[in-house]
Image 1 (cartoon, one colour):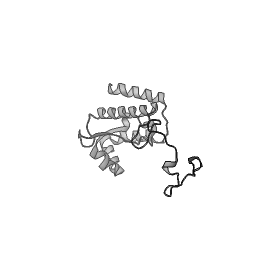
Image 2 (cartoon, rainbow, N blue to C red):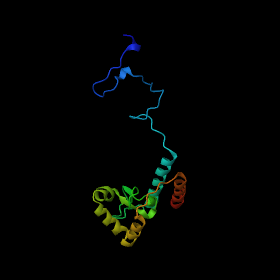
Image 3 (cartoon, helix red, strand yellow):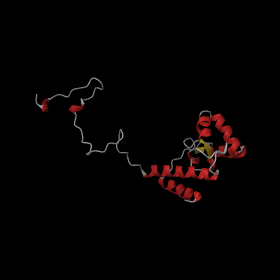
Image 4 (cartoon, rainbow, N blue to C red):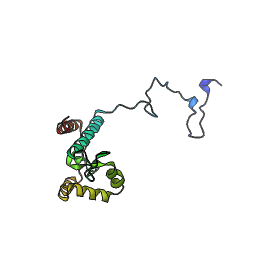
Amino acid sequence: MWPQQREFKISRRRHRRVPGDRPRCHKDEAPSYRRGGMRRPKSEKKKLVSDCHRLWSQAVKIRDGHQCRVCGSTSGLQSHHIFSDRMHGSMRYLINNGIALCFQHHYPLGHSDPCVMRENIVRAIGVETYKALENLAFPNTPIKYKVNDLKEIRSQLRTLIGE
């Protein structure tokens, strides 16, 4: 049988063409974004979001004196959103919505039990401050930041931390 007249074989496993029967590109011809290949370039908005989050985290740590607000530890310091940045997008980059916690108080004690996390936060920042943040957080207002908004937030955060 000539190659042009050959029927495609169907593999039993995935019900697709057998790899040898379908045309493939050479590795150098098309970029491979899968399985350890090249990464897709980040969009400007994604770069700004990650940059703003990094600056927000630094600003929270500076405000809290580079120590955990619960135990005073300086090792393994992380910034935590008091009210979730995904649920409360309008509060995502507010410095008052952040608290510096050591790893022990952030993940094992905090995220495993939200009640313990809330108690630790209220003890650290005070009931009045927590209630004021709660009033800002609810009602839950979804927000989608635009590139110009993120650039403005980034410049404000940079001036705040002195970068």
